[in-house]
Amino acid sequence: MRKIQTLWMALVGLLLLISSAVFAEAEGDGQAPKYSYFSLEPEITTNYVTEGSRLGFINVKVELMVDDPKLVRELEYHAPLIRDAIIETLSQQTVTKIKSLSGREAIRKACLERVNELLLAETNRRILADLLFTKYLYQ
Image (cartoon, rainbow, N blue to C red; front, side, top):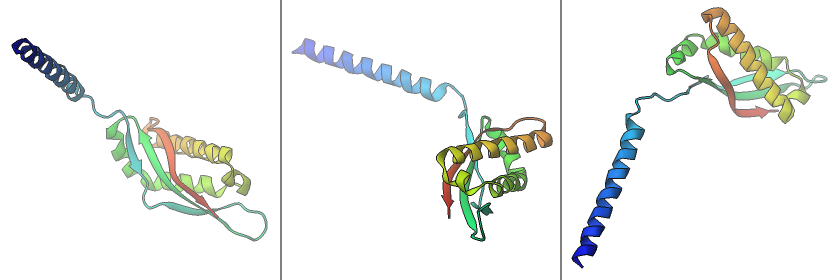
Protein backbone atom coordinates (compact mmCIF):
# COMPACT_ATOMS: atom_id res chain seq x y z
CA MET A 1 0.00 0.00 0.00
CA ARG A 2 2.85 2.36 0.83
CA LYS A 3 4.44 1.77 -2.60
CA ILE A 4 1.18 2.64 -4.36
CA GLN A 5 0.89 5.92 -2.41
CA THR A 6 4.50 6.81 -3.18
CA LEU A 7 4.03 5.96 -6.85
CA TRP A 8 0.79 7.95 -6.96
CA MET A 9 2.45 11.02 -5.37
CA ALA A 10 5.36 10.78 -7.81
CA LEU A 11 2.94 10.60 -10.74
CA VAL A 12 0.96 13.63 -9.51
CA GLY A 13 4.18 15.56 -8.96
CA LEU A 14 5.36 14.72 -12.46
CA LEU A 15 2.05 15.84 -13.99
CA LEU A 16 2.20 19.12 -12.05
CA LEU A 17 5.75 19.72 -13.20
CA ILE A 18 4.88 19.06 -16.85
CA SER A 19 1.75 21.22 -16.78
CA SER A 20 3.54 24.13 -15.10
CA ALA A 21 6.30 23.93 -17.71
CA VAL A 22 3.74 24.01 -20.53
CA PHE A 23 1.93 27.02 -19.02
CA ALA A 24 5.19 28.84 -18.38
CA GLU A 25 6.21 28.33 -22.01
CA ALA A 26 2.83 29.54 -23.28
CA GLU A 27 2.88 32.65 -21.08
CA GLY A 28 6.57 33.40 -21.21
CA ASP A 29 7.31 33.48 -24.92
CA GLY A 30 6.89 37.27 -24.78
CA GLN A 31 5.34 37.60 -28.21
CA ALA A 32 2.49 40.02 -28.72
CA PRO A 33 -0.49 38.83 -30.73
CA LYS A 34 0.45 38.60 -34.37
CA TYR A 35 -2.64 40.37 -35.75
CA SER A 36 -4.71 43.29 -34.52
CA TYR A 37 -8.06 44.55 -35.75
CA PHE A 38 -9.54 47.99 -36.17
CA SER A 39 -13.29 48.35 -36.58
CA LEU A 40 -14.52 51.16 -38.81
CA GLU A 41 -17.32 52.81 -36.85
CA PRO A 42 -20.11 53.50 -37.62
CA GLU A 43 -21.16 50.93 -40.20
CA ILE A 44 -21.11 52.04 -43.82
CA THR A 45 -24.40 52.46 -45.65
CA THR A 46 -24.41 53.60 -49.26
CA ASN A 47 -26.25 52.99 -52.51
CA TYR A 48 -25.06 50.95 -55.48
CA VAL A 49 -25.76 50.88 -59.22
CA THR A 50 -29.17 49.43 -60.13
CA GLU A 51 -31.21 49.12 -63.28
CA GLY A 52 -34.10 51.54 -63.64
CA SER A 53 -35.24 54.02 -61.03
CA ARG A 54 -35.18 51.65 -58.05
CA LEU A 55 -32.49 52.46 -55.47
CA GLY A 56 -30.27 49.76 -54.01
CA PHE A 57 -28.61 50.09 -50.62
CA ILE A 58 -25.78 48.18 -49.01
CA ASN A 59 -24.80 48.17 -45.34
CA VAL A 60 -21.42 46.76 -44.29
CA LYS A 61 -19.44 46.54 -41.10
CA VAL A 62 -15.74 46.64 -41.90
CA GLU A 63 -12.87 45.24 -39.84
CA LEU A 64 -9.31 46.11 -40.84
CA MET A 65 -6.56 43.61 -39.99
CA VAL A 66 -2.93 44.62 -39.48
CA ASP A 67 0.04 42.42 -38.60
CA ASP A 68 1.49 44.88 -36.07
CA PRO A 69 -0.60 46.31 -33.19
CA LYS A 70 1.27 49.62 -33.50
CA LEU A 71 -0.31 50.17 -36.93
CA VAL A 72 -3.79 50.54 -35.42
CA ARG A 73 -2.94 54.17 -34.60
CA GLU A 74 -2.27 54.78 -38.31
CA LEU A 75 -5.68 53.31 -39.15
CA GLU A 76 -7.39 55.53 -36.58
CA TYR A 77 -5.70 58.59 -38.05
CA HIS A 78 -6.60 57.68 -41.66
CA ALA A 79 -10.12 56.38 -40.90
CA PRO A 80 -11.91 59.13 -42.91
CA LEU A 81 -9.76 58.37 -45.98
CA ILE A 82 -10.38 54.63 -45.59
CA ARG A 83 -14.12 55.14 -45.15
CA ASP A 84 -14.31 57.31 -48.28
CA ALA A 85 -12.41 54.74 -50.38
CA ILE A 86 -14.74 51.93 -49.29
CA ILE A 87 -17.87 54.02 -49.94
CA GLU A 88 -16.58 54.96 -53.39
CA THR A 89 -15.79 51.34 -54.24
CA LEU A 90 -19.16 50.07 -53.02
CA SER A 91 -21.15 52.75 -54.83
CA GLN A 92 -19.63 51.73 -58.19
CA GLN A 93 -20.76 48.10 -57.93
CA THR A 94 -23.65 46.59 -59.89
CA VAL A 95 -26.62 44.77 -58.41
CA THR A 96 -25.46 41.38 -59.73
CA LYS A 97 -22.03 41.82 -58.20
CA ILE A 98 -23.46 42.98 -54.86
CA LYS A 99 -25.82 39.99 -54.62
CA SER A 100 -23.46 37.17 -55.63
CA LEU A 101 -20.98 35.46 -53.32
CA SER A 102 -18.15 35.69 -55.85
CA GLY A 103 -19.01 39.35 -56.41
CA ARG A 104 -18.91 39.98 -52.68
CA GLU A 105 -15.41 38.52 -52.49
CA ALA A 106 -14.31 40.58 -55.51
CA ILE A 107 -15.68 43.72 -53.83
CA ARG A 108 -13.85 42.89 -50.61
CA LYS A 109 -10.58 42.44 -52.49
CA ALA A 110 -11.15 45.66 -54.45
CA CYS A 111 -11.72 47.55 -51.20
CA LEU A 112 -8.57 46.02 -49.70
CA GLU A 113 -6.47 46.96 -52.73
CA ARG A 114 -7.89 50.50 -52.92
CA VAL A 115 -7.34 51.18 -49.22
CA ASN A 116 -3.81 49.77 -49.34
CA GLU A 117 -3.01 51.95 -52.39
CA LEU A 118 -4.16 55.07 -50.54
CA LEU A 119 -2.31 54.14 -47.35
CA LEU A 120 0.82 53.42 -49.35
CA ALA A 121 0.64 56.93 -50.81
CA GLU A 122 0.12 58.43 -47.34
CA THR A 123 2.48 56.33 -45.22
CA ASN A 124 4.92 54.77 -47.72
CA ARG A 125 3.93 51.23 -46.72
CA ARG A 126 1.13 48.74 -47.18
CA ILE A 127 -0.56 48.69 -43.80
CA LEU A 128 -3.49 46.29 -44.18
CA ALA A 129 -3.02 42.55 -44.00
CA ASP A 130 -6.72 42.03 -44.77
CA LEU A 131 -10.09 43.73 -44.88
CA LEU A 132 -13.14 41.82 -43.65
CA PHE A 133 -16.87 42.38 -43.99
CA THR A 134 -18.36 41.18 -40.71
CA LYS A 135 -21.79 42.41 -41.74
CA TYR A 136 -23.02 42.55 -45.34
CA LEU A 137 -26.63 43.46 -46.00
CA TYR A 138 -28.15 44.68 -49.24
CA GLN A 139 -31.58 45.78 -50.34
